[in-house]
Image 1 (cartoon, rainbow, N blue to C red):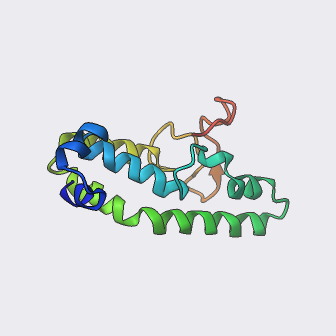
Image 2: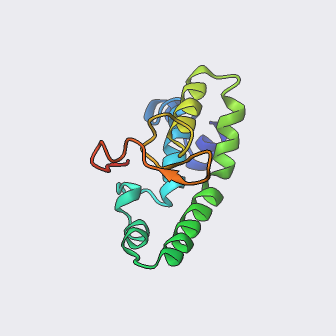
Image 3: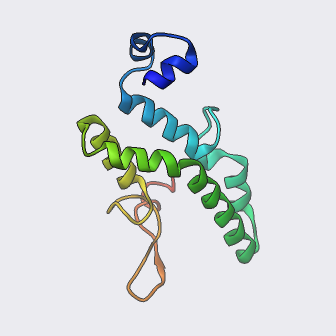
Amino acid sequence: MPAIAAAAGVSRATVFNSVGSKAVVLKASYDVAVVGDGAPVPIFQRPEMKAMFAEPDPRRTLELYAEIIAGIGERISGLYEVCRAAAEADPAIARLWDRIQAARPGRAPDSGHSRPTTDGTLTATSASTRGGEDT
């Protein structure tokens, strides 16, 4: 937090009063890193995701998916490790870490994503029962 305050040219108290705790700052930073900018547009409404879902060629769909996931991974990797490490010392960040883990495809029992079965095929989960909404 001192580095954020110094970069902004304000006191540490100003950062806490205007933004909140470290967990709040990490969550906001993580959310921006996932989508790539601060625009209030859900990831599944973004042009690159819409293009991927609209792509008729399965190979190209996988290429687009890989590009999207690689970009997300590149943007979040540092924050991911910060959250993982800080979760051991800060209960609020531990809760954030748990939410991040639960939101990852294949991690939570009701994540709303397809998951591999033991034979390597994919099976749909609750996304179909929720009307396919995934945010």
